[in-house]
Picture 1 (cartoon, helix red, strand yellow):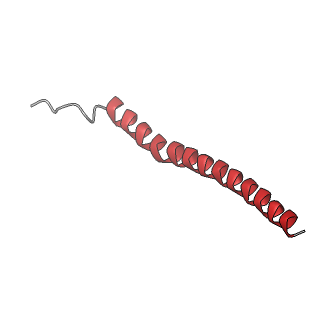
Picture 2: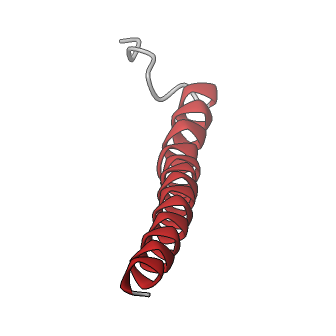
Picture 3: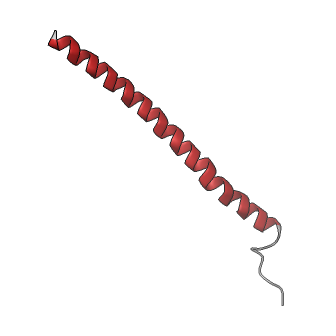
Length: 57
């Protein structure tokens, strides 16, 4: 009976590890979209306004 209990614990921990992996991947995706998205948007906006052009004297 003790072996059956240990098997149940192992299967539960495997499920938790798979769920944890999915949450890590979704967290990485969210950080990528909300972290780099605004930076890229601001860069495009400033480039369209001529922020990165050298000033003419």
